[in-house]
Amino acid sequence: MSVLWKVIGGLALGCAIAATAEAQNILLKDGKTIVTKGIRRQGEMIMATVEISIPASGDSPAKTQTGEMGYALKLIAKLDFPEPAQLRTVPDLLVAGKTAEALAQIEPVVRYYDSFRDAPGSWWAEAALIKVEALQAAGNFKDAESLIDSLARSAGDPETARAARVFVAAGMTRRGEHAKAVEIFDQVMKDATKPATLATASVNKGQSHLALKQYEPALLAFLQIPVFFPNQKMLVPQAMLGSAKAYFGLDDLTRAKATLDDLLKDFASSPQAAEAKVELEKVAKREKALAPPK
Image (cartoon, rainbow, N blue to C red; front, side):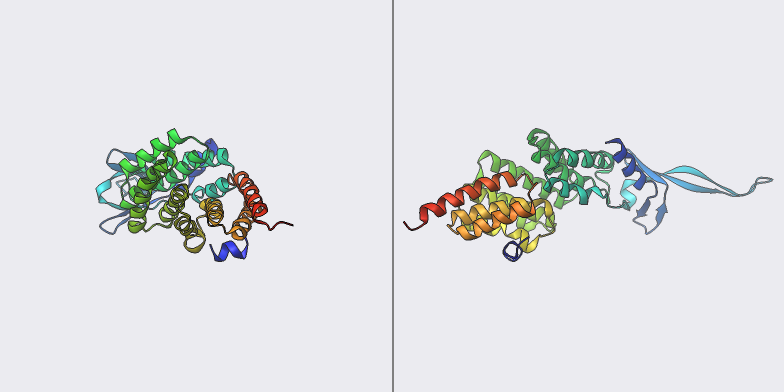
């Protein structure tokens, strides 16, 4: 990636997920830690597979056997799930344009954590938000909107609710309701704390400003990504393409061209690459029109 952008700017998977959850700790609100061999949800209880010590009795020596104990969800401070590797690998697949593979990897994660979605420590919301991105990248907005609705209704914390609102507003942007969408993005960005939520709001806000031909605020929104959220890889190609369009709108053809060239160089397989080529043609035509006569 150039100085310009840096400165300015399913079964096997299910088994793998289940394997990571075979040895879980349950952290109780009273400070106790329950070491388990696995957990499952049953209503408002978390059922834990644990080792139970049976004391010696008569001729029977003391022994240990596996049993199941239930813990009320309201008494649990956290289920100590390890972070699923797919939360890191799937965004890379989306950047590379491998949408089908991304969906195949994230779906088992969403499905596994679904029964724990309102439990502290669950990764359901994080996985579901990535699945929304993957569904949208695949053009499946119907299923994406259904999942966004689930996120909004079942969000156990304000940050998840804010992330869901960002995607609702992004839908407004696609429908042309740009001014209304910008209001929501601004509110979310004022209250949110998670980088992923802030970055997603910034990119989508930039898209609305672009549609309104408000090129300076669009550019500022897109450049939030390289300046403040460079680790949000999934959004980098979108932000680069948006920045190039904003530069073009501001008649800064040099930066528009340089940003598009960088996008094609660094993210040649991204969904934005094809559009970048179209934008480069627009830049070339504008340069030709502005060139002094020979």
